[in-house]
Image 1 (cartoon, rainbow, N blue to C red):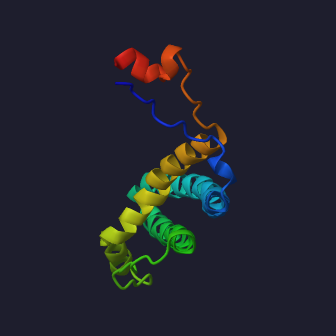
Image 2 (cartoon, rainbow, N blue to C red; image 1 turned 180 degrees about the horizontal axis):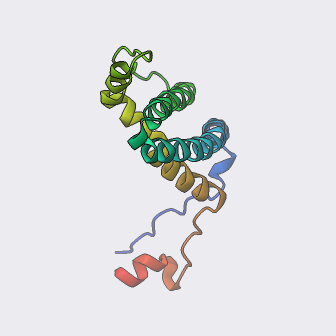
Length: 158
């Protein structure tokens, strides 16, 4: 009884039109998203650090509120990119905001969704898009082939 080897996949699958269309779509999401993540990271770190450090003298309260408003703006930009790339995204619900009094500003600071936006555009989005951009620019190399046509990982680990 002879054993047949598995068929060798063509390495030219990138020439399929579907792949090129998906690559263009992914690139249209990745490049503006990376620039947006860099901008949001630098702006948000500056605003949050300034707001927290000056909160003790009450100057930081409006700066923190401003940072949450800017975080919402960056989150809306991220969502618009995601809608354009991936389809429907459920709407985000916020508490009604009043910026004209100290109690209104404190209520804005109590809104959990605004803080989730701030964490996302400051940390999560930046790290995710940095890794995605790095993997797109420097793709992983295929493992070296060893005797018998098996890959290096399967040759080492069985």
